[in-house]
Image (cartoon, rainbow, N blue to C red):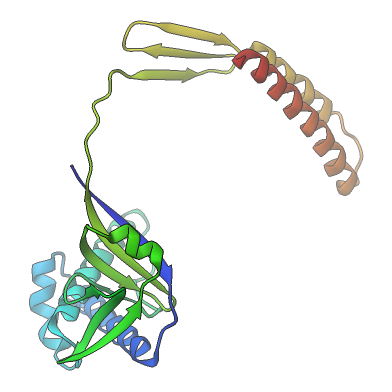
Length: 237
């Protein structure tokens, strides 16, 4: 079974990286603006509407495609949130960022990102990232102002469970049932009694001084937790 994972590190951005992140942020906001104005709901529709308008950006074409893809996801989440809350604010990317699935490479312990023809930005990778991604297929890279994240795929063996258990938590007991037919019921009525006793004690506080009330309430709260933990410890053992 294929799973997707990611690993990240901090890095020091150069002026070239900062410029690239800002260009991607502006493209992302342009795509969001177009999607809102045209009421676009799909990746294909947004690509047809926005790609030509991104021609003014002096970047590789796959950065534009990734900006369109990221904007599509943002717009979908916005419309879903708007159905629940009509007053939700329209999305807008304020922080510089970049996400791409194409063009990047990892060579000689460095991440290489193309900017223009034969012009690349290189970011050193720490040993943890190098060891983690060694032998795996890289899927995407995401950059923020001070963080780099690499997504990769990993093949893992799918485990088949031998059975299942269900836990029913009630006020004075916990019941556990398994698919093999075994059922265990654990009596916790003493825990409920202790909580009720200390709840009654705290309800009789008459002092109007909030500081004193908090201090005394905290004292009895700690006593209640200690008694409950003691009961649970003996029950578990």
